[in-house]
Each structure stands twice: as C-alpha cells, then as structure tokens.
Image (cartoon, rainbow, N blue to C red; front, side, top):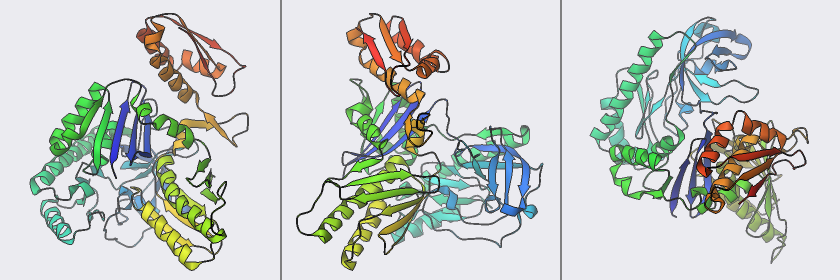
Length: 494
C-alpha cells in the first residue's frame, strides 16, 4: 500500500496529513497562536503537594499550574511508558509517598507530556525524553529500550549491543523503529546531538529563575519528517519553498536516501485540496461516518469516554441477519481504526458492534480489529468482546482531538453540539480569497461574515486581513452581518 506524507505550512498554521492507499488516515494541525507544549522542558516551582491524590501542582509559567503525579517524579523508578513508543522496559524501585519525593517551593526540571485543556493544566514529568530520528535520550533515567516494531531477533541483539556500548553513564536510551539497520556511526552522531542538547538544558536550568522555558521541540513540519517519514512512504509533498529547503536539508544529514522522495508542490490550489484532505476534514467534523455497504458509525465523544456505535443503516444484506451483521462489523473495524487516528481520539473508547451469536464471527471481527489497529502509532490496548457486543479500547494521546482543535462549543445549543471556531472560519475565508486572486485582478472585494468573526478579523486576526490586502493589491471591506448563520460567510466582488 502506497503511503504519502503532505506538509502544508503558512504564516498562520502548519498542517500535515498521512495518506495510505489514497485514504486520509492522520492529520496534525498546529496554529501559530497555539504553540505545542508537549516535549517542552521547563524549570518549575512546586506550588502545592497533595498527599491525598499523590500529586503536586507546579508553576511552569502557564495560565494554569501543571499537574505532576508521584509516579512521574524521578525518585520513583519506573519504565518509559510516557515516550509514546511501544518498548521493552524494566520497572524500578518500590513506590514512595509524594511527600518523600517533592516539597512545596522546590524548583524542578520537568517536561510536558500532555497538553493543557480548557479546564485542566498540562501534565508534566521529571523523566525527560529528548528525541532525534533514531534515538531518544533519557538523561534522568537509566532505562534502556528498543522499539517493539523492530522484530528481527538478530537486529535487536545488534542494536542492544550498540546501545549498551555508547550510552552515557547513568543515562538511558531508546532505539526508535527507523533505527533498524542504522550503523554505529549514525547512532553515535544522533547521540552526540542529544548530549549537546541536554548539556544546554542543564546550563540554562542553573542560569534562569523559575518558572522558565528551557527547551522546545521542533515545529510540526520538521517533527513530522523526523517522526513519520521513512521507507514506508512513497513520497513527501511539501507546500512552500522555505519549508521544502528545510526538509531537504534535514534529510541530507539524517536520511539522505529519502531526499529523492521529497517533492515541492507548485501552487494550483492548495496541497490539501489537491489530495482531497479539505473535504475529508469537513466529514471528520460529523458524528456520522458511512461504511461502503451502507452501514454507518456514530462517533460520540463524551467527558468520560468516546462511544462508537455500529449500525446496519441502508444495508439489508443478501443472505441472512448473521451475515449482514458480520459484514457490517468487519467494515466497521477498518473505519473505527481510521477514525481513531484521523480524529486523534484517546482515553477510553467503547465500540458497540452489532450483536453476533456465532463465536466464529466474533473471532473474525476481533482479529480484524486487532489487525487494523496494529498500524496506529499511539499506544493501544484492546479488551475482549463482551456478551453485549461491546469492545473497550484504550488509546494514549497527548493533545486535543481534531474536533476540539477545529471547533468550539456552540452557544446556541449550549455546548451540546459544535460549530467551527472564528479562527477556522477566517482561515477558510482566507483560502477562498487566495483561490480567486487571478480572477479578481485587483478589483475591490467585500467579505460578509458573522459579527464575532468580523471582530476577530479586525482584532486578534488582523494579520489575515493585512496579508489578503497586500496579496490582492486592494482594500477589503468587511461587513458584519448578524443575519448569517453560524459558520456562514460571503465573498463578494470580481
């Protein structure tokens, strides 16, 4: 199956998409005003220690204090589960009380492992992880690990010997999947970069006053190249000459054999439109997902879990009820796996399959589900099929899901549904206007939007208006129209 990676970046946001066999499987979006925090290293100060829940709050300079579990404090020895790779690890020492591990007012070195949410602070750990393409350095832990996706026993043995030989004293290492086949000199070069990075973090920790940011991970486009792009991808499409040069420059050093697979997208429409990603993103905002046979899924995120209901819909089958249920459920396994990746759903997911009495049919569906979920980069665990047709899946993620990123709670329905945020609408307007540059030919343009969208365009997102006027060579009149429905806008002119 052919894999393609798309990178699209402009002054307002970066987006990447993973296509497998022509189907959109994953999307990542980062907007300039909402910079990613996962992977960032801070010098923080402990503000409260809560023995009752074995946790502490730490001021790292954000709006809300970060949350630190006792198990994420360095003295509490453990494995490397937070690295978001499936690894062989060794657990550590006996558990100690949080009051023995940390004190109020103490200054600590910590890394963000989960983004803050509207009602929650970021989650942090004192077990620092610094990644390169082939290795992850664990400077505050002595654990060693090799990605479980490397299955060849001889290769695992070779990598283990190399890792043991080059590891810094008292520090740990993880060998990533793409390191399979990498020679010792390549791994040593990766480790040297990581070591310099860690020395810089330690030096800054001594120099600055808490709270302070010490280190931030790469931005989305380069992080995608580092973490995603490997031999399984047929091509990497990049929109924008500047990002293209950065990607090629990085790969010339890190993976020169992949440079020939990088292609610059020459604008005729946007890269995401060319590959149908925009329309797929629109469909990903719906709670109903159609299956090939006419059945459908209903995806319903709640505060506690995500429920996915499988329905036969328009499909009435050709043989009998058992075969109808089996075919629909088998189609559902593929789409459930895709929706988890595409929407980046996490936590507890409960899939409600159509009831099946035949044990062979049940086994087929569970085998198919496990096979479809095997390609997911996130850490996943699958429960058994219950007598009611329910399967519990846990999926680890560290950021907001796709729908939360692209929408906001709807004031009309009091948060029961969702509409696109002002930023999403404005970026859509920007894209539509840029598509019409040639036909407008410098003639005046009028944009009619909802009042809240107009206020955003004239205020915090004025840079979009300035950019469009410069690109068009003319002024743009923005009209606030309360009569427009939510998400609705009009572009008049030309």
